[in-house]
Length: 441
Image 1: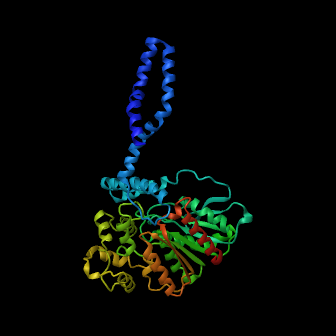
Image 2 (image 1 turned 90 degrees about the horizontal axis):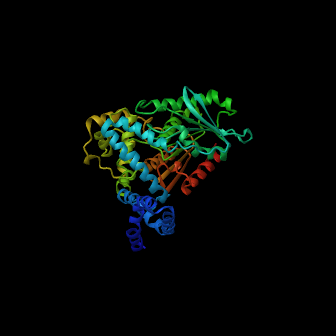
Image 3 (image 1 turned 60 degrees about the vertical axis):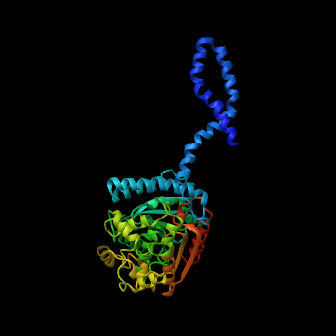
């Protein structure tokens, strides 16, 4: 096959390249009859030219794929789709982001990354008319509202959705397609909070916005949508899962939230020495899957600490972890994973900053001294995800505190799978969430 293509290229490609000038010359010297005759002969060769010309056109593309290829774990879901998606995100987001940061700094890199992430959602999603989309204001915070367009399909179920994106990227409307299925399946009304983003608005801005939205909804806005208190679920993914866990804990004594769903949540800013983080370097190194470098940069943005490359590297090396004894919960979690605290040298300035900010339970809910009274919780974790271990640890801590927990782990899932169209694993996760909410909301 390869030999045949080479022969075809050798024989016919020069003819293809020289044909236009030769035809012009022939038309002038011998007339149109001779020209048309030659064109007919040339047309008869076109079928045999298609394959070699196509092969030549594909060579640069194939070369790029070979040079930039990074193997992904054999167990990962959506492997074929992910190879293409990951490559696009890596070239645009990671490589492009490195260049932007080098030229203009980490804040400009974050602005660039916001644009890259938004690009995937610029294409209009076909609207069947079954879901009604609108905006409202809850506690001074812009909020996206999704509910069944048919009033007969609406039920007294409310979900406050808090989007992910490292507290620094993404918008609630990017989740329209991912959330519409839940609206149709449960007949619920979803309020997706457009909270303020870091680094322009660091902690506690996002917490304040999300709590204000929940409070305003439960006290005033529910009746405007024909809903009643007592049927509110707080749900979020990634950094949104962190904010959901924080809000549910903060409001647990007021009994405003009936249940919470945490999708691969961030539960601590001290997880860089956990196995799920280390596995990134052994199984996914260099890929655009959620990686330790992005998490470190976003955590620094969120906590209003300089997100330069030196500090990013220090977080990855766990040099921001306070000395033993600062948090018994943190010591227990790290010791469980054989974290030898006397074999590293913490950065004095950085560890002091994280001692005052990172140990705050409204930043790291995993480290909260009291989790009793939190609402029933569903925790979903992905096997190929740096946040896997801290998510599972949070489920265990909730359960130990007497909270009713449904812990769902998907070994072949990856971070962000909720936004991957036509994924079998994503469909299973959606079914599991819907079944949980059917019983608990």
